Image 1 (cartoon, rainbow, N blue to C red):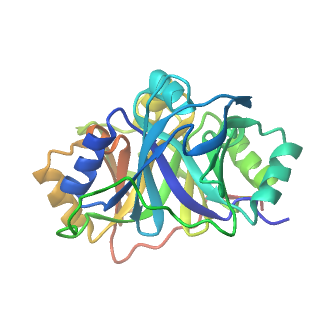
Image 2 (tube, rainbow, N blue to C red):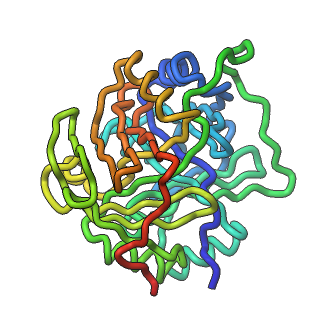
Length: 328
């Protein structure tokens, strides 16, 4: 079998104020330009939530980060799943859109495996967007794209900024999606055996393998097991905290299993640190792995509505041998 999901297409972030958030992304981080669209009963047909026919409304804006679409969504009512997410969790990453061999084959897979609809719409009479309930399995919502042959991105209702972007973006590419789980072995098994995503390389991070650990800028050791695999050039990471100290444990306690962070590439780790210092983006969590790799989570939650991880590999860094691989 081939994996049902072949590529990361989009990271979807629910926000309270689209205009303000879009402005911060563009003006502070140089991410953009943003194309703005309005989704409502006049622009989208056959809307449904939880499999039940009902209209809802939202404004959204899309931009590109190194070939992955970044979407900001402001719900305009209390009906949509975006509104449910905002009420339950606050602003944050609502879903990830993953490419498939075909929309039809993905629908067949979902039907066969009982992956029910979370939300659906038929936009512009030639584009199906279809959120599936993969939360039990993948610990996040996955969106399916169903563009028909005639689909072309329509003219947006607005663009921000209106003039050409000035300066270079600090973040150049989506490197990783990091998901916190309760049981790494079980989650990894489902990803591999059910979705054909893998193989998974397993690592143990603790005071014996990582130096200078800190949480919230304070020096303290923590421990986790993690596994990484590839989805179309973007690393997918599953993380099981092994104590109550790490930010992963904090996230799991507050929100349950789900997407904890996104790792974004930068021109250099040093230039990213300078940007963070200049803009007051404090440390969420840090470690120096294997004496040649800095992993560095920054508090971009107020601005970007998610945690961003910075990579700081030194020239000598090579991925070490994992402690295990699944499947063998």
